Amino acid sequence: MSIRVAVAGASGYAGGELIRLVAGHPGFDLVATTAHSRAGHRLDVVHPQLAGLDMVLGETDAAALTDADLVFLALPHSQSAALAAQLPPEVRIVDLGADHRLADPAAWANYYGGSHAGQWTYGLPELPGQRELIAGSTRVANTGCYAAAITLALAPLVAAGAVRPADVVVVAASGTSGAGRAAKEHLLGSEVMGDLSPYKVGAHQHVPEIKQATGATSLSFTPVLAPMPRGILATVTAVPTGDTDPRAVLAEAYADAPFVHLLPEGAWPHTAATVGSNSCHLQAGIDADSGRVIVVSAIDNLGKGAAGQAVQNANLMLGLPETTGLSTFGVAP
Image (cartoon, rainbow, N blue to C red):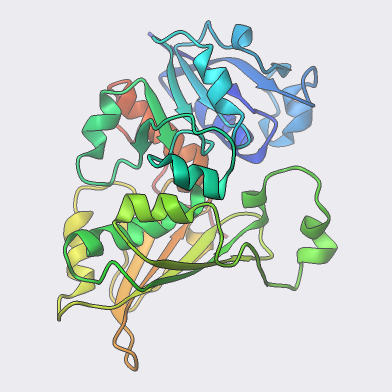
């Protein structure tokens, strides 16, 4: 029997990618897509890549979503909690926004502001024990895009005691789709092309989420806007506690993880190899001068960083193989 699926926030980039994945999923039946300002528009006009899906975007309200067995909320931060509260408890929900990721209300107030909606099960299956928690949940908070890339690189090393949880430094570049689809001057092609620009330096909202998920106690994070549509490349450095091989730690941690790939020694991740997939590519080494551990992580920010991750979580919630409807392989060239 098909699972009836609805996507709220379907006009955005993550929403469009969700619809693409849901439409190709063997167990899902897409029954509703909703939006705010684009409500009433044909889906294939808003997302030309979805030509052939004969649907019209509806208004984003509880009435449009209650007939679904599973709802994906791809809404701006602070907008999903109120809507989720209006849905029946038996409806499974994956929230792609930040509303339910953080355990600490003070961290929410500092980085997002407003009322803290409470924490749901954190949707990163590769963390120890998390698959089982997700499988037993009806409410799951999807990871942030940067948080997915950085946590997969760092969490096993902190858990193994291979690096100090303090003095972690991250520089990560993201494609422009990570900033959403709203028209903004700094995201115009003429502003982005041929340029790299840091933003939210030392104050990015994913910092408390990354610390919560990895066990890091001190994190310096510099995000960079890159002139590409999609992808994240994160370089994570930390101080080793001994002579443990970071590659061995990552290899053991992800031996049974279908979407996390430790590349052959000497091969370093690049974003193009992950586009269109739900995979994360990792490589690790030791800086010859400083002695710091270096881990480089690449993901598609709309895949493992958003829609693909959400479908992976939904599969677990529904008792399906977590790889169902998802590709481990990127699209090239």
